[in-house]
Image (cartoon, rainbow, N blue to C red; front, top):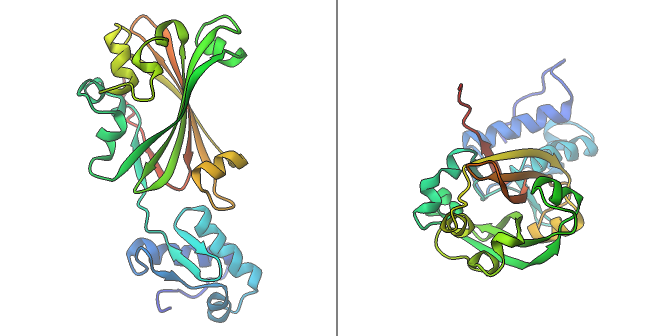
Length: 256
């Protein structure tokens, strides 16, 4: 444990200092992917701290997505590499008009899969009707998916489309074809031209934890995205839930 520094007086809570020492060892490569991280007993012996302090330090790393704990085995540096999600760049028209899905274009050679959980028609509630400019109770098509990267579930997504533009089209099928749903909207002359996203962080629901296979204490990031046509007609709402430790969100900010 030569990579662990001594504690510095007046440098913040002890558990945060220990967590920072471990973080630096991970980020510098001294503790590589899959490496065992000093456990509670190791930290107690090295720093002379209480067990609760050692536990809090390791909890900081778990909540940051840097390590994972295997019960009765130990704590290890996570092997999974974060997914970089690019905001405006990922939605450029050439990505989905090329015949590839946005996910395929963004992930490159990393192993990934899309699981369609359900496709069906539902009645628009107050939120959906407001965002899609529909009357409450009007029919919308709902598509729910789960995304895996390197065989790890990382994202849930549920999209809603006005039924009048989606019913009877490939959008209502589990596989909408090359280019995904945006390709099919473009076929109808309704290709999206701009999007608005709202991003937030919270703790997951029990169902989200189950579907994303999240450990206790793992936060999620949510994004609600609304897609608009060139004449500002809202044509899709996409409610997305991400494993908060699996993603880095990157946005291009342009001075108009």
